[in-house]
Image 1 (spheres, rainbow, N blue to C red):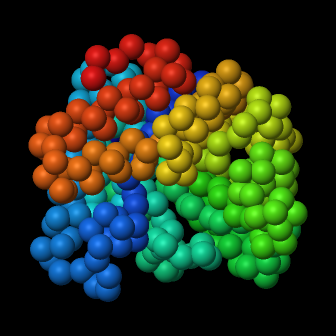
Image 2 (spheres, rainbow, N blue to C red):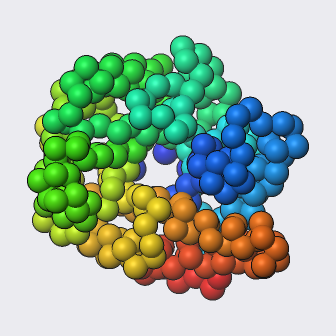
Length: 315
């Protein structure tokens, strides 16, 4: 492992930018991109892995086109991205691995009590846990999730030198959505920011201490500042936040990035489906060539980095 990754694994990320191309999607990859259900055959697994290699090639092209290597990272799963993770680590890229089971409401470990073995096998820069957590929702559910997240947090901080990322989603409870007449956008704008702050506070109180919070986009600078303030409260000065894309259209993602970019404590983004989904769909349908899909994904990733921090990129 390169000196930069060794350093990054031993410290926090505040002084650095973090531009993540996430493609750890598993359930949605199988069901929506390929239309598969049930256990996959070796041939199907190979097809999914090949599609993820298209995204990885785009990531490498973006680095060669101007995205700074020290800020660029991939988030990819072991199931379809094993070879990618090995290659990326050998090249000194920032690597991030998911720990959660894909496609289920409640956070649990993909590999159960053996989660540490899988983390240690790949030694990523960061381990990521996606959690759907509404602080005013199902209390027993939240407590179970917080307990598992705490065990991961303690393992990473006390027994490993690997960083910890939480991907926090705050889905609306039925009653909360009803307050806004079923309008998801109104919920996102008027209530979700407060719930995000409460969720972070509750998880901190439960002993969950990530190095990076990967959070849903916010529409106002003030909301971004409040999220950073709670993420960094009580001496957590080195914790960073990044904006996730949530599969939104390019216009909405650009708005979220522009809002967060000027807020100290927001250090980057992780935008996946908005970057790669349409090019992959067109490539699968043989509407474009593989190299065209690679270029389209790289260009979108570069555009988001340029928007966030002004980096020049030729892709």
